[in-house]
Image 1: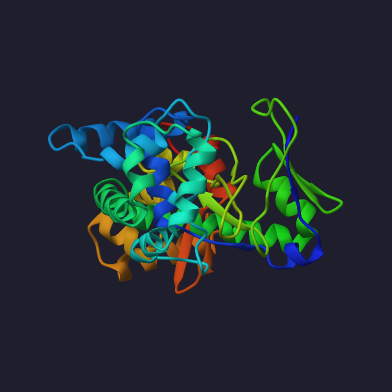
Image 2: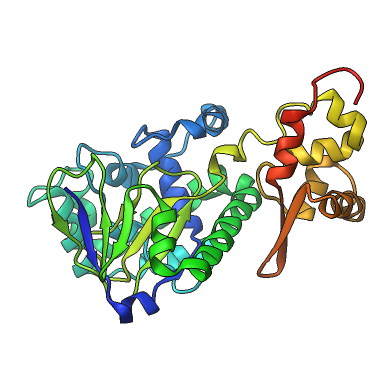
Length: 334
């Protein structure tokens, strides 16, 4: 069985990528609540629990929407971004613009004709309820996402750059086949399979093409909105999310340190997850120019790759760099 999206030539031409801080915030809250928990986030989950232990987040309206016994949650919580990248302020403004009718229709789809007591006030006064939810989500973003946003953003940017290359190399079929093992596009139809689907469902696609949104702090599954008042979003696990919280946490092998020097060996380890020069300078406590000199040497040797994403340049360890640690002995002379 599968979820199907009709996606003809016109809609495919209008399909785009986007990054959303609000998407990461909602996903992070669901991970904390144990919904579709992804084991690669365990290190972040431990950090988040410690962060919230002394001053828990108060999310009475939001929690009732995203943590329930229902399989779905209201689509208006993560509106499709208007552009390729949005700020949390822009995301929350789009959330607050949801009409009263759209709120009530979405709540009815998820909860039926008798919503839980915690949800009823939102159905009765949607505008006031959305303002309260937006305030709660802003607080969650500032506590849980903002401290890590530069690193999360680097992973998202690197993912989109990789997908763009796949699209250029093999068109839509190659792009969607690479997004997730459960996802395929063929003959004007996008199909999401896998064991989660017990019956055939067809998405009531929103206007225009799809909005493809990589997610770092999210489920291991692809999430497609079945109904939406904005463009239909396809949220999928970003490449490299599994290394984000572990990159640079283990010391480089002594043989690699002797070959490259300690700073370059540590950079090679840290760049298992993409990062900018500024991020690395902050993490290593040195100037960006000093980091740039080391990165230039590593790049010239083919051990790290660099790619421009907007106004930033991302660096990541290449397969040759990763194999260096695997092939050199952990101790002894090089």
